[in-house]
Image (cartoon, rainbow, N blue to C red; front, side):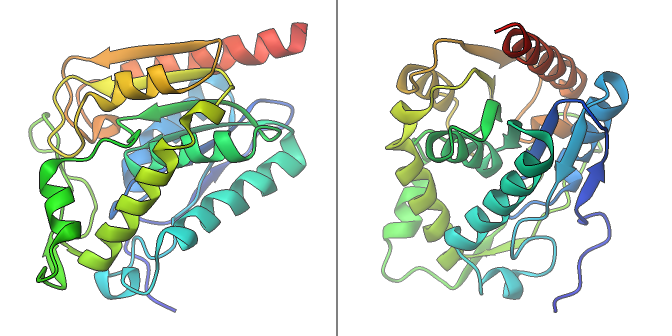
Length: 256
């Protein structure tokens, strides 16, 4: 088994009889990018929180190259089923590809998902550079990593310095397929989108908002963060708005 990088471990903060929140990190990243959000949702709001390490992540690019989108989906699906078995419907939040996984789970497992908070997720719109890469027959085996798109000075994301192109193609397939499922998302949704994002185009936020079928659909624009917003200047705003959204939805569900 591949050795897990220090800081990339899965985390869990247990709480009985409280809303459960599944927290998903992004492509080539690790749980480090989501740990603050998970810790604070537990500390400030008392939620039960689990942040799994997606297959092939937090180890090495060589290990990642042995995985693909079905493996990443499998990690998220297994965590969702486990949490739902003990806590009922689960709230899901995620960054980047983790945000795409939020949308995917909500579309495919509506009976298990109470609400979602995708953060700089992809609703099917990719950068031109990524599209050109996945279509290039002469692409190299590896390209430079996409981590640490962060506005705050001195903050570094724990992510791979290089990425297997095979996995970039798999991520492209996952994001495109999920974009085609947006209309099946009917649960309450809070979309969090940075105005400036150098990894995924910001128009993904409105694209998701327009594509889903949720009657309760909202968008929060971040003015002071780049792609890895959960580690950036708006990280506490993300905690507060996500925590309040979950509390509101859970309360409404309890009243119904």
